[in-house]
Image (cartoon, rainbow over all chains, first blue to last red; front, side, top):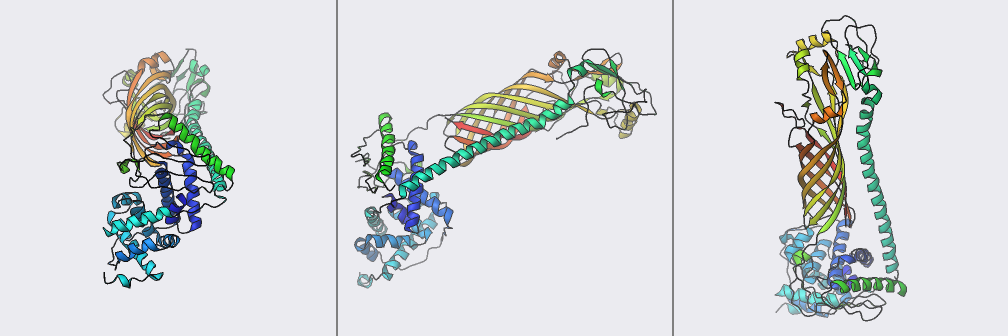
Length: 157
Length: 452
């Protein structure tokens, strides 16, 4: 599970392994701090997410773009295809997103953070977080199209 | 709505995604832990060495000048007479153009100088063996099951430990190699994410560590908790303060000398060093500290610093006529100090700022000073402590204000340093003067904090 989490944030599988290892070191060092205020899995996930964010911040310059471009989005297509497509392929599509987009997409759509919380965590504005998510979603759609999914059948809907 | 649906599907698909760790993953984790522990140990040692080095350097700054400047017992019992009449001997220590001649006398603990207010032609001499040392002013101076078992056992033991103490909900450990954290089954997500840092709608639940150490979640609703009060934290602070005084203050005991000889004595503030420890109680961002410290205040006593003559010409004339040079004797006061300080921490990250203020009560425990007096129309200076004790107030309250930068170098240890200022709340001397003789100190406050 933890490796799956770090895989979504990392640029590659090796990087994901590295993040999990770093995360486990932190987990062992700070196990005494776990106060059962949440489930263990939540805590472990949180540690790995923080480790991943720190790792990405330290190893690459994350580009945050605040202006929202008007991109054509076919939400129906995305939603339907997300159900059907191969899981590994989907994760690879997420992994291929630019770092800033990937982080916000993961935190907002998967982890369930609000834009406000993301903004506070990443030290960006809420509008930047929103634009990153919109862009990430649009880019993910483009990737699905490039992988051969046909969106035309949804055009009339 | 579309966003919510998108997020929901993505969440579900993400949870289905499981990757197996590399075979060597756990070896690496253990190696990384060992490396980190070694690094931490090296850091502690270097910080401790730095701290001790700073303390020693601070002592070194103060002690040499003090030792060299203070007279030995033998010399302090001797007395000398300063006369500008004898001009035949050359000064051995004082490099002044003008000269002072000092002759030995048998009075214990008294060093005296005779002043003859007549003009001399030649240079007078000084017998350095018989007077306290005099110097120029120096102001401002993995992979295998064993490893998996180790890790799982480690987690199990920690959880059991917690369970025995304050675990509110049950955690079932299914098999030796499985860890099932099974709390939070049914509750609504009410977790205060802003405080605790967890997201409530993250579904949590049963985690199983198998041989491959894949941790598989099953969807259960979110955990909740009530706000837990921050516990009190106790800490020990070891610190030093090296400060410079910004204010000179009057000796004041020599009004008669001033009247008789037209010489004005003013003791010159120099430095202050404090070394001590503090015990503190911390709740959230506030800390209350108290402890004990050793403080040494240094100041110089000039033999003649200035005359009461107002114009430079008159002063020059006075110096020429009396054959005096401005020279100083190092003096020190030693205090036992009890600070009571209150601090507020800004920020909770690794590097943060702490504002501190409070009071410090000083008790004068030792004096190493001189007074100047007139005996038979001669100026004398003596080391008699009883006289000194009469001269200085035994208790001194101070106000201390500091801003410190804290750096947490571990879970239990942090290093701090920052500027500090101290103000005496009342005069240093028992005698009352028109000029306020309460020194102000500005300096550096640094040390280590151990939390336990």
